Length: 219
Ligand SMILES: *Cc1c(COP(=O)(O)O)cnc(C)c1O
Image 1 (cartoon, rainbow, N blue to C red):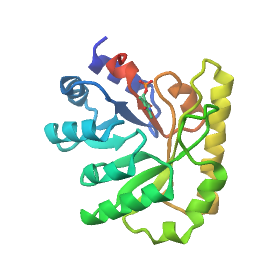
Image 2 (cartoon, protein in one colour; image 1 turned 90 degrees about the vertical axis):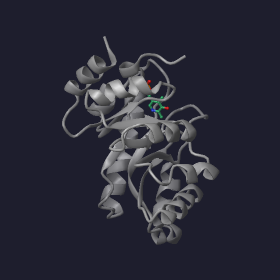
Image 3 (cartoon, rainbow, N blue to C red; image 1 turned 180 degrees about the vertical axis):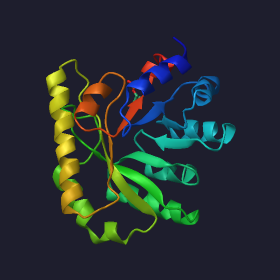
């Protein structure tokens, strides 16, 4: 199937409250334009330089999501245009995003990444770190960032029960901070990729990040 066909067939299965991020990392612009032609306006990239090059060359009604791990010293390259940063996992990074957003007189939406997988290598905050971040004065003082939700990645495994456990855990953290922090803007739960997005949606995801099932495998 073509990229456009893949995209449309996935979209037709998504419930209305679930947003699709088309993960286009490593893919050339003509591939992205095919998805654009089929109506896709949200693209996810994991490298700031690649995302910036694509932003420069592509239509300006695209919303660019940074889904990869962000290095503090590179925030400045995307502050002008990025629409949502998924992988924020420290106060220090939030402060840098806030500072760079200020320069463009913008408020940048962010998701806090929660560590839910068993692997040590995946980034993210745990529950305690999350609540101390959200209740800190430093956090509350920032005016140019807005935390709109949480993001997580499950363990890379074929064990569906394991993945389900991790997604359910993230959903429960999401529900807890929504009810205890009176943060009205927390509405996005970014979880689910090509291999596990249906399960993620069953577990309460509101945003799925799908790459290879749309654009084909990456080398
Ligand atoms: C690459 C990537 C995806 C998409 O992965 P696929 O398996 O190709 O759908 C989703 N989320 C993150 C954070 C990624 O880096």
